[in-house]
Image (cartoon, rainbow, N blue to C red):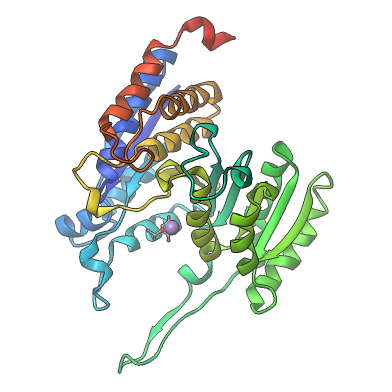
Length: 360
Ligand code: IPM
Ligand code: MN
């Protein structure tokens, strides 16, 4: 298969982890006879530094012209504590999600057996946890009208949803549940928010079209508690933009590190793949960033094009590195294995994998 991949390394540790992903994708291309080509483009703080804009038109054009986008991370501390900043790196990612209509954000979370003792949560709570979060990505409070009064003493952000915006991701979540464990949990705040009540109505109606899937509801505050009390109860979590942002970081604790969580953002046409972690500026250039979230995002990219066997090989290689303790310090304190060491282990594992075992 030929794939033309736009690579947006972004800020902080983004370039380091994305480089490991490209090594791994190249190993897959070599092993399975695919042709992957890459076009690099700027986004985020680095794009603001060089062009004044977080998402330059040239970057958008490269993305529009690609089959898929591999994205690193976004954000720079120089913007975080500056309420007066006129442009922010994050606007680049939000504008890209919107421009490409990437309304379904898919975030798988699972507890790896080899890491059960790495999570601050008790082993018996997380062992066997395996869920996927379907987060709506192009609407809600992130994209509602923003207001700041002239004297700077009043601000507001609108949260709005249409039936259509809810319905399209809901179908995706139910289809995913049919292939998994037949359960969808809608996370909302329907006891307070009008938008959440619309979500409940739309989702309940759509559920009738998927009779094998059980639907239940949780208020987001309770969901945050259930996530660490009993994460095994979840299969597919369906939720709006901001709730999904928050509970997916929380869910990463189950896996032992946010450095392991991958994501896919899909719409009707384009798809973008990115680790859910941020730009971790304190780690930039130190070789301590975990590349596995980015590498597993590349596996999701391959899944998206039906290259499931290839994606499985990446997952197997990543799990092997974890099992063997070839891990960055987020997983093993004081580990001397670097970002590159982990990437190269996974790359070599794929290169050396026995052809016979591939077909078995
Ligand atoms: C994420 C990130 C982004 C978000 C930021 C960088 C805008 O936290 O992808 O989860 O809030 O969606
Ligand atoms: Mn987030």
